[in-house]
Length: 305
Length: 242
Image 1 (cartoon, rainbow over the protein chains, first blue to last red):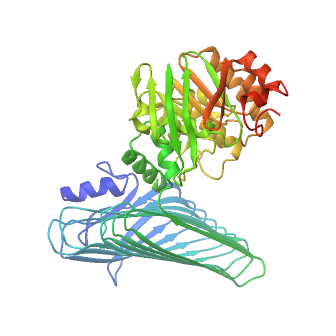
Image 2: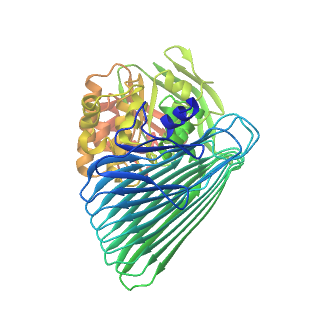
Image 3: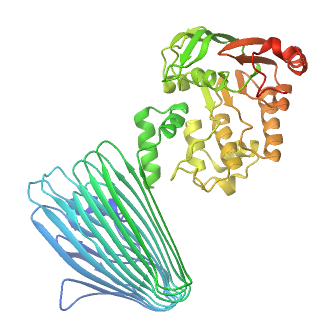
């Protein structure tokens, strides 16, 4: 495994020289390490690049990590990973992608992840994206996430893009069954000329299904972000979409939350707030002894934490 | 000692608010600044903290001229300020805010010591965000705790009673009484509340942008409580004890 891959792994996952639990490390489109566990089997797909990850029913407390790293320019990595989570399993899945370039050539990772959660299962999905290096080549990450949540299952997604990615197009779709819950926490920071577009489409199809989608973003310099969420309530359900964005310098954010209630007992809410850092927030932190720059950094760090 | 000399301040649209204000606050005293609404009390507090910059005049702290120091520099010199309308932050926890105020990371026990002074149980609050999920009373107490955590020489509280319930208010009086017992520096409270005036060492009345009267608390209370005396102190009565 390359040194650059190790550096990226430290930033996007819990890697500290090794992983706890099952793992697969993808490096420049190839496998750089893999281990299954008794309860979590990782196998290569036969018809396309990527993995099938099978988590046995009633697997409790285990973690599976599947980071992907691109270590140089002129790489266009496409991968399809499918997760099959057995009934009443309760596990953590750590994905994430790091892209490093030192040249003028572009580098891209496009991860298409599908999650199939069986009845009563619970998954915490953690995904961090980062770009590093001094290369001028475009660093882009375009994740696609598709989820099918069966009865009373819970998927908690914690997804963050923490810097250095020039362009991202993030697409998440979910079908949520009876009693199932989808919780999404998204954090995106863009700077310089970067762009980020994020799309969510959630269909609440079962009685008492629910989604709670919170996106926090910061657009600095000349960067631009777009947020579009669609929640469709096809059954008695609850849906909440919240987009909070901080803009600074010439940053731009377009937010468009959409709600569609197709059932009389669907209760759907959306909130969107975009603005620069409130002057009072800066003043308060300055009265505690922080400089204006320290106050702004503290507010942004907290907002994206 | 904090001394303000001949302070003038105008609003951005040119309305004169402070009009040659002079004030001297000795160390080790709890001074309550009162006066009618619009008389310049909050402006005075913000001038002390450096949030507003005076048009002219001089501010001295322990013999040092701090007139040209900005908010951060005055905070470093030991001036703290509790906002009348506390600021909310998405993503910043109570723990983080108190730690920023103290300048150090803090144990749960240390946080508990600070938060219990304002009637909050640390375990319930330290991981909560300082955002709209907190009630007006809760956020006010956290604002006061952020000043207590600084242990500074000059602590300024701008109408700490505003927006809090009666129970919290009683608790607040106890907090100020405790602070007064251990006071090394100066405690300045902007307030209309009789119970806060009663715990003061000295009371200053601000009206029409100037100090109209200042003296020992018992003497000033007699003047303020006297139905005729007030007109001799202030040009307007609204907002005072009447």
